[in-house]
Length: 116
Image 1: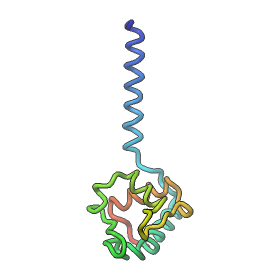
Image 2: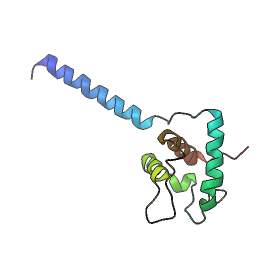
Image 3: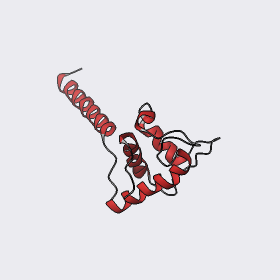
Image 4: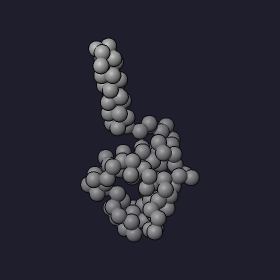
């Protein structure tokens, strides 16, 4: 392989690795403050009806940072959007976008905020 082509391939591989790393570590987009409040309310009221009002468990498992730490974010987002077949967990994709589900997952892993 000639040197210019080798350099070109190395640069492309480096840029690809950088793009993948950036995409994996990027925080989901922040909903506007009013939507954040609506999402907090949704999680506290609707999710809390099964996962416990403090999200510490109930009919559904706890949604605490310790409990969720082992789960990949994309898996949790998929669960929020599509539910879990064969369980009481419904899908919420009619009510939240993928980006909003990612924001919820990030908040859950940090310790979910209280309602104002």
